[in-house]
Image (tube, one colour):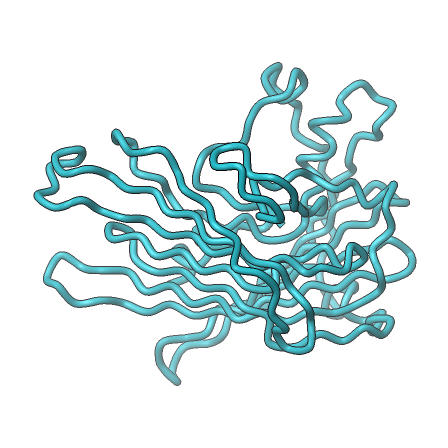
Length: 274
């Protein structure tokens, strides 16, 4: 279970996304389209703590399904620090919950990560923007889950996106869209057309800059949902940024950026970063 949940929500460190505007494919307006990165070193985010529930239902070869659940907590403070923690919900009472934590300190240019239970915190020094590796630094500084929803590599029709208007989710006003991609019969050995649906709801308030709800329904990989459960707009407790007492601190240099990242490359299809 540990590996599977980590594959669903791999931890990166802290730029997030917002994208509202005109859909270039069908001319629809006010439709959240391909997310663009918002640099919160320039655009401050409001202090807050948000809790999400992530559920993945995966089809099995025998026709049955497996369900994996986790709880995600994102917090931002007025010192431009961000913490992301993901707790895997055990499938049985005998198993111990496992929590992965990542903290980004933009002023100190560090990313710290640890697990509970565990005994070690890894502190990585990030490159500064002026170092010439600004794009790579931004990617290394992503905190927030990168939810893996693999896109089948097969022929498909042009995506169609429609606006879903605005709704209030757990007290947060959000604007949504639904995108469908159809794989015609025979594209993957399928007898009937297969339809993949992605639904995204973005908080309207630019100071929040969060995806309030995400739902992906794929006939091959299953269903993935991530939805806001609670939002606290107060300054987070400083203790959430600290590892448990007694953890050993291990210093690491940041990874060297390959030329493709320094030059700039498009994210893999099927990834949604926040």
